[in-house]
Length: 86
Image 1 (cartoon, one colour):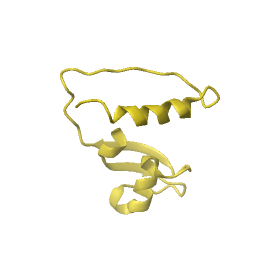
Image 2: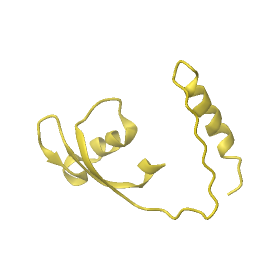
Image 3: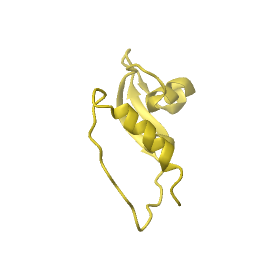
């Protein structure tokens, strides 16, 4: 998941201050990567560690809203995905 590879970000907070990882602190850095349920500012840029993509890759897409059980689909995927071979 991409958020696991974020090493820095620049954002403008609600007070108009330009922040990066060092100046925002680890709590806000955690929150902007999905650890919080609010709006913390406008992200201007992300700095990511790139990872090697395997030669064989399987991709699929499921379009489900919450009303259609999208959360349940994700939950079930998390249960089975760990059982696939590397």
